Image (cartoon, rainbow, N blue to C red; front, side, top):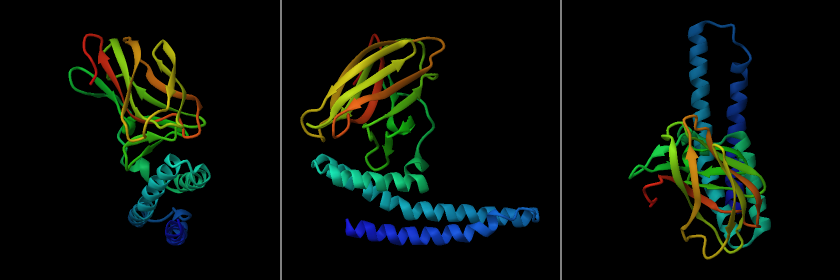
Length: 237
């Protein structure tokens, strides 16, 4: 923890210096176009350097947070989570490599709703290291547009991780369908779990697929691997 805090102090100092260097350029814009273009390129390079500084620290924090959470050290986990949120407010490296919001075609006519393709609100966030949606505690939602999914009936399957102190209730909404899902934490966090959520109908005006936290236990509801939409005639893998 001390090593991480030391890195945080160093990264913070360097980033403050870089941001201070950017200020004079941000306040004087009536300059020749060529000079302004050079300034903009310089500022973009600085932003890239800031992201480079924060990404290893952010990844280390996420790993430490999961470790403390799974070992039941909730006070430590909360402190680390606050630091992650602070870093996110400054610069969010998780979002730099995320794909556009969409559902993608899987195998055998299925469609996949993946963590990297979700529109996220509040506590839920994408962990770049594990490729999971984590932070399913308190409040938050994950949304995927269904405009690329042909209309028809689909079986919905949830793939996720949980643990003995995880679980809670989430609401699934897809088109006109709405359902409350009870997730009971059990086993080990490393175990992949699968839950069939039932059938939904995607109409010609498809709308969105939305998962919203209703309540959670001390370690959150789950860590989401993916949601699979399988045409009624086939079975999701």
